[in-house]
Image 1 (cartoon, rainbow, N blue to C red):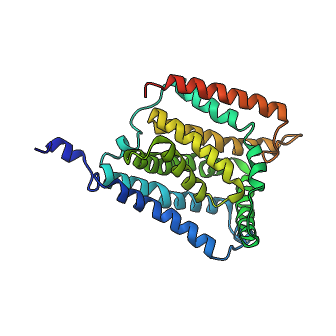
Image 2 (image 1 turned 90 degrees about the horizontal axis):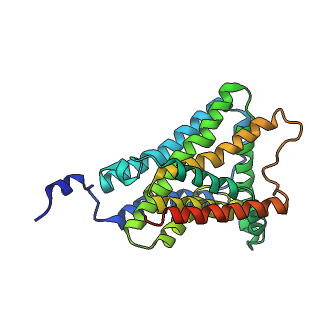
Image 3 (image 1 turned 45 degrees about the vertical axis):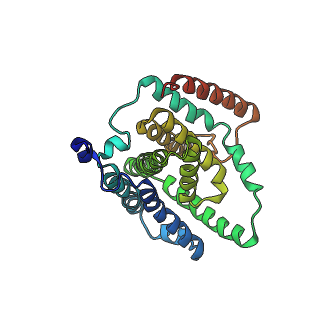
Length: 289
């Protein structure tokens, strides 16, 4: 006999995780396919004729429509109890929060070396031209937003580049997609890898593929070990927020910080050691999960 309380807490497609996963993935693959098939326009023309405030509001609206609302809708149809399924009901402990932030921060000291490896991945001439155009548009977009002036533009850019993406992307790729994959019993490694690949695909930046996969893997691992989405949101927010903070500092600094240049090898080595230590300690602290 079915439990009526359980039935009330189930979504319309609770017993169809594969169907829900296909539904959640199709828009990402479709947008990526359309982007690859269509001509890549020069985004600098758009930026030249649009104010930063307008572009920020447009970006926030786009991310909300493309990621936040679908994540909430699909989660409701799948599990009904949206916040519970996305693991947003419980705040993490301060110890785990600091460990997670330390892992993400230390990774930034050596992740640029993955860009070097990324450059040696062989590509056909056609793909190289396509990815180069997409890469240049992504860099132009980032430069445009980071060229803010005044407090209002800074706050809008911080919201656009740090807060909204952290919440939206973690809800969709870790909370929704990785959550569904774990329900499908595909295994933790496969769930983290697949969600990270989709996360990297969504950014349309082949020349940042390995760093995006690596970052997605870290975020996915932390979410898998803790089942707490606030931790991956905080890590994502810190990573993106640092870019905006550095841009603010560079406006008045005598010696600006170049985030695209890898730090000296010995500093990267120290960062890697700290990263490994923190990751090991984090693993030990969450082993009961």
